[in-house]
Amino acid sequence: MGQKPGGRGRDSNRGGPVDVCVPELPATLRQIRDQKNLSRATAYKCSGVAPSYIYQIESGLRQPSLTKLDCLINAYELDEDQARYVRDLRSPPVDLEPEEELRRRVTSDAGFSAHLQDMQNRGMPGAYMTPLFNVLMCNDLLRSVLPGIDEAGSILVWQFSPVAKELQVYWEREAVRAVATAKGVLARHRHAEHAQRLLRKMSCNNDFRRIWESNIDVSYGRDSTDLKYFRVRGSDEIVGYSLTLSAVPETSDLVLLNVVRKQSERRPGSLAE
Figure 1 (cartoon, rainbow, N blue to C red):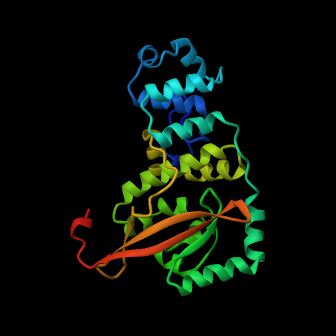
Figure 2: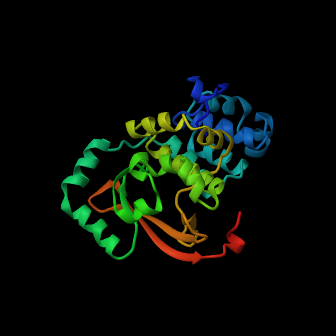
Figure 3: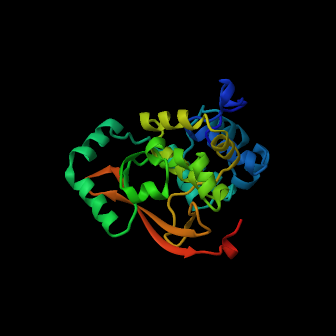
């Protein structure tokens, strides 16, 4: 939903321009309307919002009132998360504490490493992250589930790495979910330096760019029963994990990732792709 109107991306390996940019309301509403195959005239019939008003919104010339925005949300039949997303994009962005300061806070407080070690002792992979999925500290069990996470430095970056494609049973589905989740967070923190730096990095990945530009899904959370399935290297075992994110009480700019092993199968059966 962060596509520049009229822009066309070229392969990032050739150093050309890319279409991934920080999400803003005008381009997002235009992309949604295009995905729904609605002309402005048809959108007017469904919403009661004049075509000229829709044009002004999509061009960034006018900030829609909440009433008009709700009319478009209903006309476009957006789900709860998509509706929240466009409302977040209408609201002022929320800044984030500098990542370097968050990392210093986590690494200098022994309580954080002690908690991750306690999780390790209980067989739980875990990590402290920024809201934008950059890993500040993790335990060895998470490293075993996500090989190369230290080098990637980010759950989102790792999701689009070759090793993620190798190990995840439903990689495409998980990649779409990852982008949808990233959009939800980026809407709230879209002007933070974290967000802009992350999108600059992800713009170099063709799969990320493809999903970002072609999909209007948005997600603000994952049900704990919706497991994430991984292959175990060197065996025919497939393991399902439940992932939950929780805010750290000391600051809203830190997130704790909890990973719990829920299911293991030697013969994948219905889990086979």
